[in-house]
Amino acid sequence: MCTTMSFYVLTKWLTSISLLAQFYMMAKIYAEGELLWGVHQLGGVINEFVMRCILPQNFINSKVFLFLYWWYILAILVSLYSAFQFSALLLVPRYQRYSIKALLPTPEFFGEQAGADQHNVLPGDSDPHEYFADYL
Image (cartoon, rainbow, N blue to C red; front, side, top):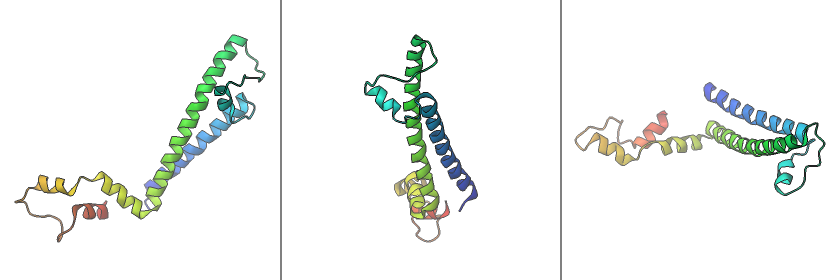
């Protein structure tokens, strides 16, 4: 396995763990540990938590933390998706080849760029996709 890619995947997982910890701390501090606080707010449940704030400012804080709640959920989902995707890219060889081939241009592109009178620089009658996927 590639060491640089391993560190990159580790960083992805650490980012996901950090976001989960921040989400939990926000829920613990603001909503007294209620992880579904934002869902209840959107459902119309009135905030019954006692806060040390002035009432108008409490309304503004509630809306700011409601936005942050959903922002953290979006960031967690994107981060976990990315961590799983790069873990699969690191650990599953078939997925590596599939990803490389998806990024390469079509075989027709190679023929158009090289022209009909150009010699094949690839060994034998190799398919350019297979050749580049093997060596990338």
